[in-house]
Length: 286
Image 1 (tube, rainbow, N blue to C red):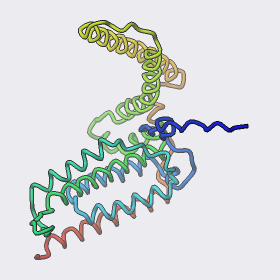
Image 2: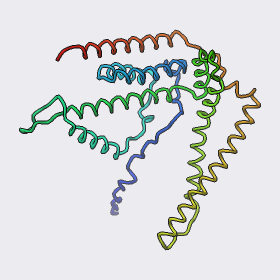
Image 3: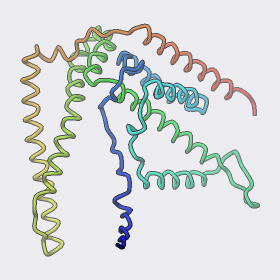
Image 4: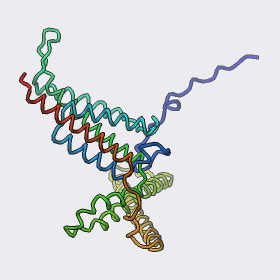
């Protein structure tokens, strides 16, 4: 008997599928980060954004980056939760690095007898690291926080603003509804798009007819999405009324715990240290 050689595997079939971006879906777990109050995480993210706005130096990025890595490690975030970075994004970043180098600035190095200034490239790398840091902080909140906890946390944090007659509870309830409806609507739109692609359609003979067909498909998808959104809104309104009204969305007994105060203290200490070090570096003569 002769054995037949199996055909070589197709590279397109063995290629790993890209991981999509998943928003507002917490990673299962009961870690320290999962048990933190949602208001604490929001305060840290807002505080980090404000701190990086006024002190966007490498010291601040390094200290906050260390805390971020520790938070990811404590939350036990799996590698599969990270989305796949498309190749075109790496090309854009490389192009930005090269074009930023053309702006010049210190430090300067010699490469093969050429005088190369790396000031612009270092600025580009710093802004890229800052952007990645802020995105990671927001992702940690999404990975470790239930959507239902964000509205009550905002209502608790905004309670002092009620003195100025600001409708904090109403705004928190509206945000809570939006955050709950966002993943649901994304799933509905994905189902609609998949169903639309499965429908058989005729191939128009001319380019003008193809453009008209694409325009009709877009209009049909938008109309169907609006109908689905209104139906979901009606169902959600009935469910909210049955559970006691929209005021229940902003009400929660959750409050800061000792772990939350420790987290805030660590962040304040890191922020104060970064401010002091950045100020000393700017005042030190070169």
